[in-house]
Length: 107
Image (cartoon, rainbow, N blue to C red; front, side, top):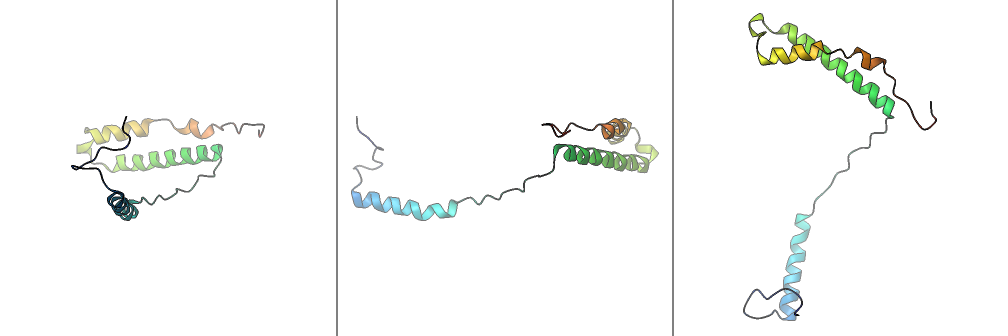
């Protein structure tokens, strides 16, 4: 069983032609290199991330409540007002009272 790729032309490539094709591919490769940036690692503990997330939710809920009060009466029946009312009606206060476990004997 023959090995390698089938020739693209009428005849197999000579060593010099194969080497020239290889060098041409190597010159093109650096242009296609991908620069990957590393995102900073979040070093906060889980309880701290929980408190931050709950604080963010409560802040957003307060902002949505202000937005809802700023909407004119004529727009209170539309989808935006309904979504804002649903967000404002959520009771997020119990989330702030929850203290997640620290785990692994660090209680």
